[in-house]
Amino acid sequence: MAQTALDPDPAHGRTLAEQHAQQQRTTAEKVRSCSEKTSAVKTPAVKTSAVKTPTAIPLSRGHSFANSIPATGATFNEHQVVYRPVADKAPPNSIVAVTPAGQKLSRRHRGAPSHEDESTRGPGMTRPRPQQSPGVPSEGVQPPPLAHVATIEVDVDPPVTIGTTVDGVRRVVPIRGGRVHGPDLAGRVLHAGADFQQYPAEDLAYLVADYVLELEDGHHVLVENRALRTGDPEDLRKVMAGETVDPARIYFRCVPRLTADEAGPYAWMNRTLFIGTGQRRPDGVRIDVFRVH
Image (cartoon, rainbow, N blue to C red; front, side, top):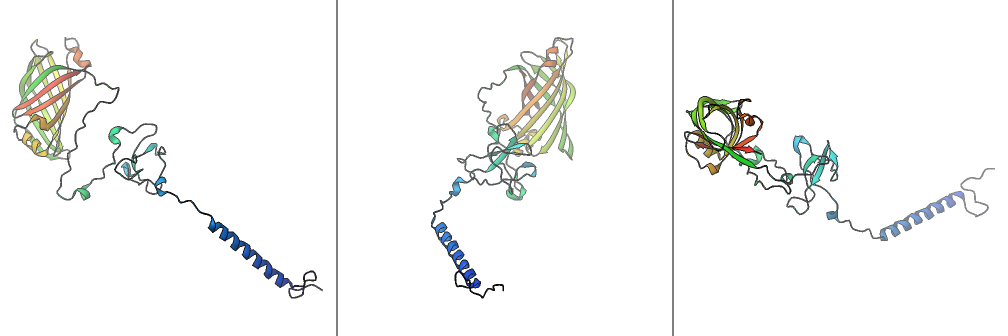
């Protein structure tokens, strides 16, 4: 006859139900004992300052690491992640920029990116004019030497204002003559040409001036000058109105292209790079031209 749970075990004198209950009590005591031993072990505190939790800063082109923070040196869309040093004022380990993988971050990009927009500036406030680079030379890099070629003094007529176009305010300034003098060139500016001006912003002007030089020996030189002029908006308005402004208050730089007859004595200009500085005067413009060696 089969033994039931209520029948006593011949070997122990207890029913199978009593044996099962005893086994459950023994197992529970072992689990409780293990839990007490585990709670008695001291878990070392984790220093949160030692854990790198970079503060995500939205990057250009809409990229952001807000949901997935990569380690420094990792690549993201073929760019390498760079973190701000802890010594900086921004939060430690902040993502400040990405550079092409394998390239070092240049010094001028080591600051936090600016996210200034109209909402942060407030209505009616103008964007602050960017400061010019101090031009500190890099270690081991020498700028190319320059040689003064000539100074061109261009006389102009009153400007013709086109108006505000899709490219900003456009003006055309007719060139009516002038002089050229210097170590390599001497002669006059012909009454042929104009300065085509574009003002994409109130503190910025792009200038495209094309005209002709007639030298004392009868040869002609074509000047195609591309320039950038920037400064305080009020100073630029005075310049546009023909008023005198201290040249030190205006950043005026240009890249004139000088070309001449290949068979003549000035053919060397065709294979030379020139740069220059400019000054706007009430009745004209002065351009100092330098050869880059």
